[in-house]
Image 1 (cartoon, helix red, strand yellow):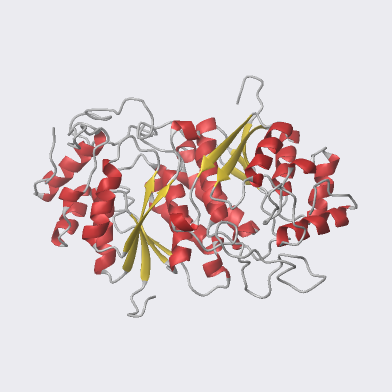
Image 2: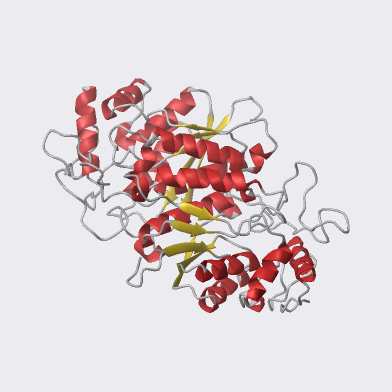
Length: 242
Length: 242
């Protein structure tokens, strides 16, 4: 804790609207927030640019970008988010269903192997460095039901691991908490929550396949989920679309 | 599995003698071994050079080095292994005790925050990519009693997490196993085991503070543990020392 006794928190920040909302929630709860993002071989850089803008506007006390290699050349290639394969357009599921929803046991091709496990592991290491016992992440089980590492059971298992893994808790006493405040919220609820706290969603980025000027495609899963969320929230998305 | 039905395994390989022994054990158990190392801002490169030699000599089918930033500049600096602070010499504990042993609740300064959690997380992602459900690591609870992430409870917690985290097991059925075959062995037992399998420990590297020509210092914790292990095993360390 710093001199004014605010507890420190590490906040995973992707540049998307979920993590922007999480940062606002963590700041509202009185944490000194250390934002943490990853440069993991994303196919475009708008995501990290957004993360920087969101960290600054959202009141993070600092913002680190850790470079890791999850791309094909690093051996982790099997996702449309990092590799040169087509991003699915106009929905994996039928019209009227939530974009990004999966059928049966199928996992979206935009899944990156063990991504949330890797990101939370870095957050845990960084929490030790800054002396924090609270990690916030924007995982959400509603719109991303196909991603196994977005489920409450995963978050609980990571919290258990964190409390066995680190020097900070090795002597007992303090315990890590992994906060996933959006996990049971719909995209519409997330956006309403953020708008009430004054989050500027115009700084965020969601599109998997943006134009070279950064404009969103409106057709990929991420855009479709986002636009449906703004419709649910009865609000207008401030982003520019092609 | 490949055409000859050998199961695939991911083997975390540091270049040290523990993971060289683990690779030999995994190969002996009939796995096609995919070696995985990390370029994480180590202060010297001998470790990765050794990992490459060990992977090739030890029968790994391939070897990946993933670049990640755990150094001070990446925000994770609080360890003598990556930062510019002095490596402890001639023991943290008194003469006659195992070097590297810690007193009370003290964690060695060579501890890197959440390192094993981060490494296992990458191994999990890589296992998904190569279609493996078996991850081997050289963690050891005996000589590294001060490292919380070297305990059996940590390995169990990670295995539990792995089976909740990934697409591979999301539908039930197959389960990941985290193998830590050295976890209850002394350094002497590890070395004896490896020598019986023909491991060439002359290819490995342990020293935290080697000379510019790669010669080991013999005085840092890692050298002291290693030399004590060879003494226990009744064998001569083939490495060159200053």
